[in-house]
Amino acid sequence: MFAYICVGSNDLGRSAAFYDATLGVLGYQRCDTSAESETSWNGWIGWGRYENEGAVQDALWVCKPYNGAPASVGNGSMVAMWASSWAQVDAFHAAALIHGGTSEGAPGLRLLYNPDFYAAYVRDPDGNKICALCRGFTSRQ
Image 1 (cartoon, rainbow, N blue to C red):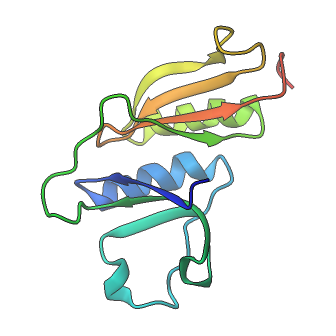
Image 2 (cartoon, rainbow, N blue to C red; image 1 turned 60 degrees about the vertical axis):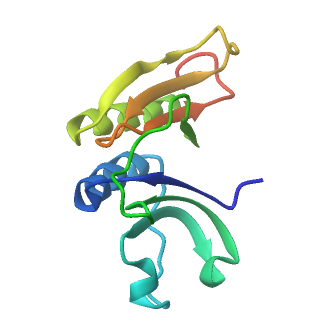
Image 3 (cartoon, rainbow, N blue to C red; image 1 turned 180 degrees about the vertical axis):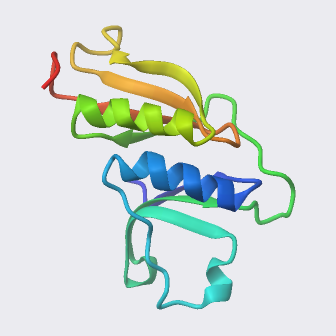
C-alpha cells in the first residue's frame, strides 16, 4: 500500500545518527540516491528500498519540512517497522536510547493485541514515534 513514509526533522545530522543506529539493527540501510540530482535530495535521508529513481520503493524518509517551518510530530502518528526477532526489537530499543531517543514502551509482548505481538516503542530526537515489531513467536527464540 505505501510507497514511502516521511517524518520531519529539525536536525538531519542528529536524525541520521539515530536512524542509522536504530534501523541498522533491523537490517535497513540508507537509500542510495547518488545517481540522481544532489539538489533534489538536499535535506532528505531515507532507509529501506529505493530503486529506479523511486519507481520501486519501500522506504522511511526523514526530511526538513518543505515549507521551511519547524518539524513537529503528529498526535497519534506512529511508524512501525518489522523486526525478524525479539533480539532485533531489543537492540532497536537500546540503540534508540543511546542515540538520543526516548522510550515510549520497553520491549515486550503486548498480549492486548495478540499473543505473538512483541514490540518496543520509542520517540526519535524530534519526537516522532517509531515502533519495532516482531510477530510469529510467543517466547524468546
